[in-house]
Image (cartoon, rainbow, N blue to C red; front, side, top):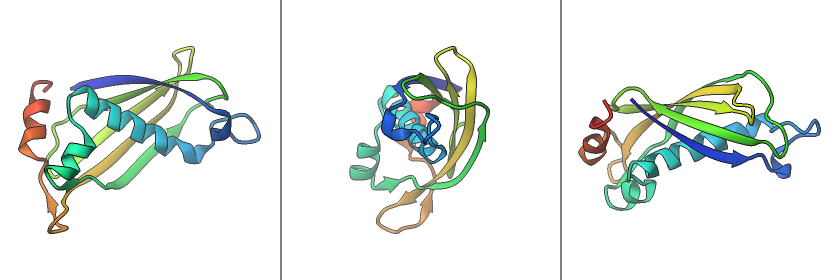
Amino acid sequence: MYSFDFHKRVRYGETDMMGYLYYGNYAQLYEIGRVETMRSLGLTYKELEEVHRIMMPVVAVEARFLAPALYDEMLTIRTILDTLPGRTIIFKNEIYNASEKLIHDAKVKLVFIDMNSQKMVSCPEYMLKTLRAWF
């Protein structure tokens, strides 16, 4: 299993009239967590796409809103990989407020697509080699 925490403050433009993080903006937090988690492992979307010609589109999202995230609050985005990827990869997200209370969780499922053939493929071996150390 691999877990990575990234901190992000809720900006004014991300909130609704109640001062809560607008629900539509949570997907951006998942993406931030996913990108920074990969980067923490020495993997980048840029290399995946430009060198290996693989893209990872989202195919499913499951989310639970437990409590609001508030304007100017520092959030912890915890991203967890608890299974090695095959033809899909699932990133679990836990979002904590400044008091370290779990306020949101989500699962985001992505697939690996060969950019040349536009067909679904398995996780590239170079990614698996990096991830296996954590499983």
